[in-house]
Image 1: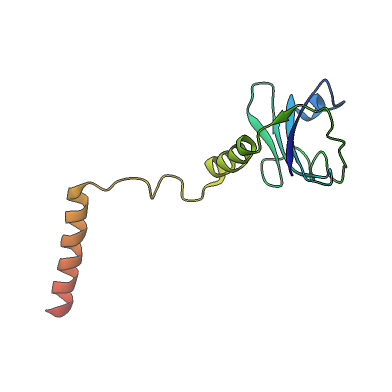
Image 2: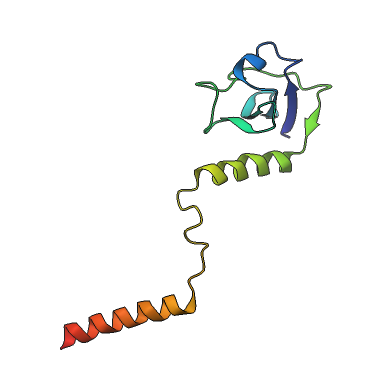
Length: 123
């Protein structure tokens, strides 16, 4: 069973030096951290491991085994939503290009251009 643990700058020395006020870690059944999300003082996502943006070459908890007893937890669903949603919002290569509706007259214009092209080729 995976758990999502919340760490603050009062619990981890040097977290504020990395520009982080809190960090959420996903811990597997054996106590190893698999993913991290770090937030600055304003609540902006500034660290994601694995992925970008990151504040460290590796995860801040890289190779650490965590004793998760008596730790503050967050919901795994919320962690997944933040990890995936924030990532795609910042790194979606297609952005909103495919979400934009084409007006009817735009479709008509494209059809006319294609029709003219076919007419000129067959003429």
